[in-house]
Image (tube, rainbow, N blue to C red):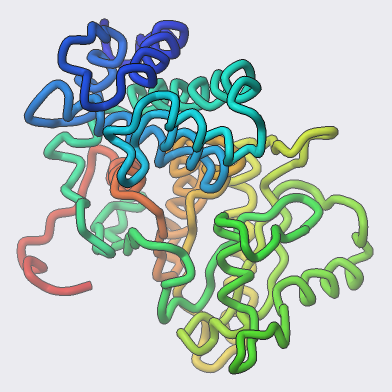
Length: 368
């Protein structure tokens, strides 16, 4: 089976087999679809290790929270569950959705494993994340990547850590829905993490100020959009609240997610991500001289790759197309990307470098 040609139904059936057998009993199982996907996406010493690495990367791509946690328990990927029997893993996964084991088996389990299968299919399209030309990102928290923007040599900084650990970045771009309604701060999305990091709390942890939420409401009132959606691609600027102590000065909220009526899901189009990225860079130029020192650094997450469901490669390409066009025209911005996993960093590196990486021998050994 060629990379990129794995069949969804075959993957789903084999994931069910893995769920029943557990990770410790893969050796004697025939899993041709998973074998093909693993061969196309990871490098490992043994077949079993390759399949486990593939499953972990697929689960890591799921929306953080109930879905990802339930998938980890179902497949025995959660810490300490490798040797659990299938019934115990199903019981714990059912608890995540607060349903009975039987209801989870009939409904949620199929959905969870189907989502894992979709991520495996996306991984086979993204290519060999363990290939030598993709770079070794295991254990790396940030790195400078030299690329070409048009005919101009530029460098990007890639961060592999939670967005709230960013330091000394003037502007952080935050994905938002078209209502500019922030998720609750206890959620695990980029926007929830930024809301939580920006909040001002007292010495006992009590919330004193929720600046991102409050400033977005004022922005909506000022622009006459309270209670109704803005056009996808709109960007609203707010302060950074408590994140100013870490050197972050502005948050640009990029409306890229369109809520799907009657569901908790969103629709995200790559064209809207490109439009929002371009608008964020335009806004950066407008605000550049209004601050002392002037704004210069801007950091993008992979917009739309969380709840929006876009594969990393699609999001990275949509963001990079706008960034590259701006840098190629001579824009002076210091551009950063922040991602959650080494696999996402590899995708960003491949997307931005393309086939023309800049190699400057005189820069060897210099820090970013």
